[in-house]
Length: 270
Length: 187
Image 1 (cartoon, rainbow over the protein chains, first blue to last red):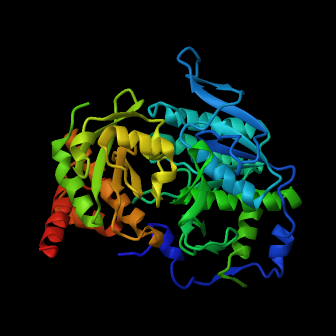
Image 2 (cartoon, rainbow over the protein chains, first blue to last red; image 1 turned 45 degrees about the vertical axis):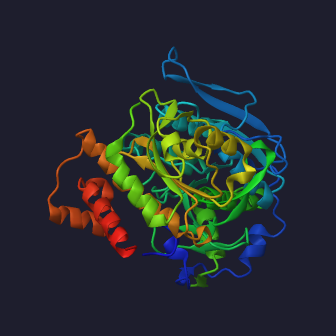
């Protein structure tokens, strides 16, 4: 029996060394003084509570709602909303901690009906790409076979548009989307208190491990709670990506992934 | 939605596995807007059975919406959760593990929850174990709906070795074996 969640097991104990580009002092180049200023971060989730003290405000909103009269069965409403379950607020609070000057955009795709969840997820991700987001946090996933193709296509579009997608892995056996795709940055939780800690996984599809065990996160109702989940690990990496994009906005998703790998504590110069 | 006594052995085994005060399984209603607790074991089990919650409420809703597992060390600071549970069961746990339950095709079916596990949540492993149990519960549900294909024992063993429980249909036997083992171990 492993001592850590499914994908986190690769980050337990002594980390295996991972060869990376021979870049010295990369951490300072990538993250030194980085605040994420000017970077638009889409939190594609259950909404964000903009009044939560850890969130520090929301720059914009989009809610994907079901609409039987619409040809695509949904429409996007760009008006303020709340957080249905607190999940998006938790992720937003973590991102703000690492990148205090980002613009947080709340893209609410999760709603009070689970049957239409997949189409809303796709539409919200598409909205983020069409509306100038620079990075998206996807601390949600699906195992639906029907969503495999459509989600894969929109994630490829994001990659070619230069928008990194940071995705939480899942703790269940079998593939989960979009964390499974090579075009995204997939993350699992690992122990530790350092929000900047990062490990590279030599055994993909999950490529990175970040802080996500017993994390003090923002919670519904303005409070906080100590929780464990890959959702929170992904949000930490999103904060790092937003930080480096603030300083180096020209970085493409594959360059971002390369920098992350070189930043990992188990990286060794090749 | 009717309760599912056929799931009780699996839920009881999960409770045993974690040395928990209670374990329960809630399923998504056909309309997709509510979760119904259909099987439960342990503290508050009688009261939680049949209880319906909107999917936008509490930890179960969080898990069902995001398809992501979560372990919460202390739910007391979440007033919404405490009220929900108090009204339903008169048992308010301190810690909660919750993972999604999906069909073999990956459709969201519900949530498997463990209340006050004896395991150390800080170690992280409980989510991996409960996630595996949830995969087996998903297979139980598939089988009850006649959607899973029957596999031979060798294929079952291969599925277990690969960790790909989605392709096995004998999950009930596996969970029963786990429960029997645990009961024997606990004397």
